[in-house]
Image 1: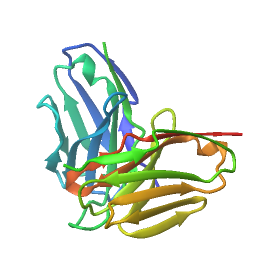
Image 2: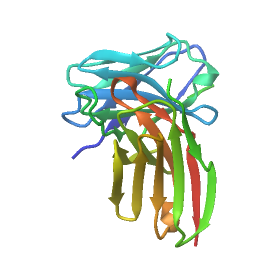
Image 3: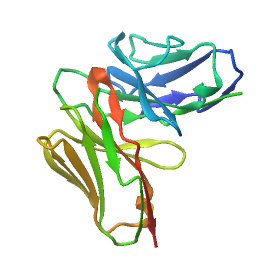
Amino acid sequence: KAGVTQTPRYLIKTRGQQVTLSCSPISGHRSVSWYQQTPGQGLQFLFEYFSETQRNKGNFPGRFSGRQFSNSRSEMNVSTLELGDSALYLCASSWGTGVGLDYGYTFGSGTRLTVV
Amino acid sequence: KNEVEQSPQNLTAQEGEFITINCSYSVGISALHWLQQHPGGGIVSLFMLSSGKKKHGRLIATINIQEKHSSLHITASHPRDSAVYICAAGGGADGLTFGKGTHLIIQP
């Protein structure tokens, strides 16, 4: 079965620009979550979407936003890029249903964003 | 807010050794995840635990809910086990809270 697909794999942007990253989850998975990984902060939760609704957002500025489409594909957008936004951005998909149930995750390969 | 602590941060061992990585978390959770990350960034989910113990090949994961502690064991370690191992707590709408990771190197 197809895994989680993230595009593009690599991206170089200039400070002040904006960027859109895409994540296609495993078929049937309705939850998509996004994470930022940097050498200094490690992995941090950005936001989570389920059935087109953002259920939660991590401690990131409003420049970071996202959305989920009816086919569960998700995009995240970063506006007014800063040098500190250089990171590996990972998405993960899961069934995501039910409170108190265990959630298994499948991660994409990530998008490596470099801001210059 | 959940805090996740992992130890050790770095671990170098000889091929064949028994490896243990520990993880503690501060707040009660629905699940604890063990992840593996190889150079290049891809993350693979190894285990998801809510209680007890799970085994997959040479990997064993245990969790003690009362003590808020989990361990990942690797038996008969091999150089291909060299990777970063990350524990993560929570999930669902709250997303995952990650430990800093354990850099494991297995020397032949």
